[in-house]
Amino acid sequence: MKRLTDTEREAGLATLPAWAYSPERGGCISRKLVFADFAQAFAFMTQVALHAEKSDHHPEWFNVYNRVNITLTTHDAEGLSQRDLAMAKIIDALYLPFTALKQV
Image 1 (cartoon, rainbow, N blue to C red):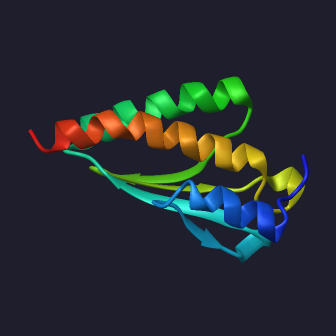
Image 2: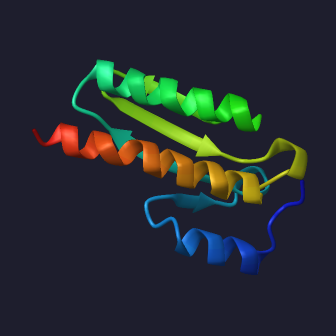
């Protein structure tokens, strides 16, 4: 897996407005998510874990009660790769239904 060029990274991040880029460790993206409660946060993490296992690309994450912080980077590429952008899109899609539940 190859690390994204600056142009590839900028184009990819333009499609992921909720994610923040950091140049640390060759490049990574992160997102902070909030849920209605711990059960929703854990259910979301379970869904992400299933997708991550299938794609063999696992996020770095931290959970406290209703918050989940996720960081994506590709260790083999020593930075951000297409795998990270693809996983971020999956995470965004999985999070969307929870945003509706949070407001009920």
